[in-house]
Image 1 (cartoon, rainbow, N blue to C red):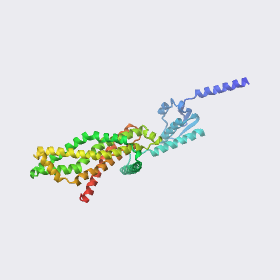
Image 2 (image 1 turned 45 degrees about the horizontal axis):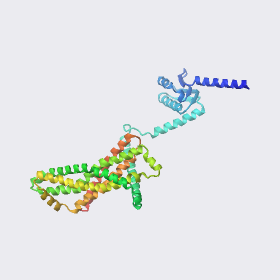
Image 3 (image 1 turned 180 degrees about the vertical axis):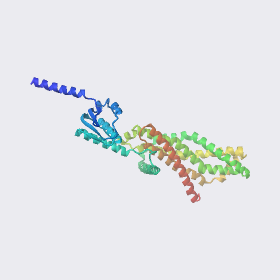
Image 4 (image 1 turned 90 degrees about the vertical axis):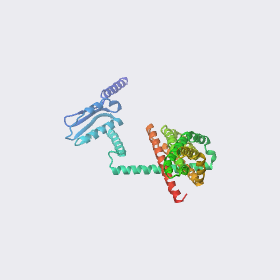
Length: 393
């Protein structure tokens, strides 16, 4: 028995040594137009095969046969390499076939070939390779898909807001106050400065025209109506879109990349309730107040410029302003602010949630959020103008 065991051990050891001796995969060209594949076509045996494949130069004028009878082992890496070699040969020669491959290896090769074919079919062609009509179709479909996703996001946010309104205890007041400070109070300097300068520009541009007709006093009408009705809410919304809307997209996008949003869903925390609603409520409060602040600073800038360019005193300017401005002019500008606030927050958060991949995706979605927010704010302002004109407001 001991002798039999010793003999079996010796044979097993000899088999292992033999297998170890022929472990490396190899490929060679025979005289009868056959490529002879030998050895272990797995991760451990593919160390030197890349150099052999690079040096391989089979004839292109006649069919080739891959003789795989001496392939000892094959894993997914070896099957992928063999499939790549097969595709290369099929592209450069009249015909190529595989002979002698073991059934288990052949099955693995079929699976790898199917996966590569599926990946090639799903890979979108480059923009340069697409025809103009195809590019147009893909762009239109991408716009439609993003619009549909945005509307779904708006609906889901509205549903969550309604649920929070019915259950006020669920509202997170601390994040709301924090966002009011960040999006409202901290934005006062830049909003005030730009509104003041805009009032100066409006008064300065109108000064020459009004002076020609001796209508200097009407600079109060020009500055008051334009700032309160159009410029103040619009410039405030554009500033906040670039300042706070981009911050919302970057914050949520970074959380999406680092899988913090997935962790919140795992813990049973609704991301929209946690991340979107506090920003939305805070912006609905802050943007109208910022618009009022912009109104005051814009009129102040116009008043100073009227004093310097048209010799219209402060008392005269304010007296004419009170007569020129009616309550409708003021409420129209303030009424636009909540709509602009909805656009800025929803677009910024929506683009943040659509972030995929790494840091480059965060930057891309942040840029997209700013562009879309400003575009939609201007479109909404134009629609307001059309509606108010039709209603004679």
